[in-house]
Length: 174
Image (cartoon, rainbow, N blue to C red; front, side, top):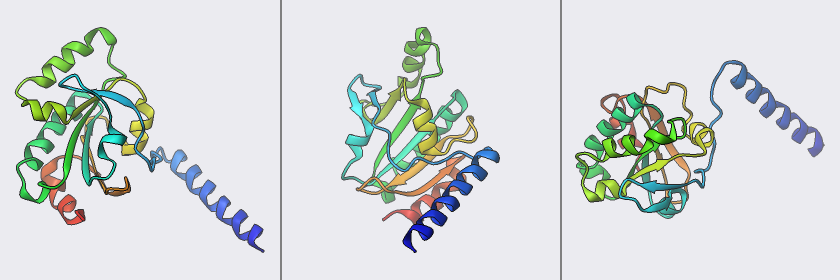
């Protein structure tokens, strides 16, 4: 009897995956990719390790437009008292950018950022698909944000302008 239930459950999951793929919907990864990256200040970082044991907001951009939106999110969240006990990390995924211009991109991102903000800004140049899956990317031009608890469980996710989503994110805070 348990075999039948398990088989039925597997079929339901496979059907859900097939429907999502057919509709062009991203499948969301449930764990933070263990990608090695570097902060804008030049320090090596594995974000999955850095946030372990802490509530955190991760804000990612997958294009220049998305990156501009990341900056708006950070400007709104960092000074907000509701996020005082929450680690806020910016993420730029540059795997698709040609290697010879990545330095110029990084240099442009550093302008106007304090040293502490540069320490919380992570640049990845690999594992783009894993990060796209983790954030559920469907529109490259949007910034993506998610809230994770101390165990790494995703509590909230959204994409788009901070002005439209900040209230939802605050409501999801533990």
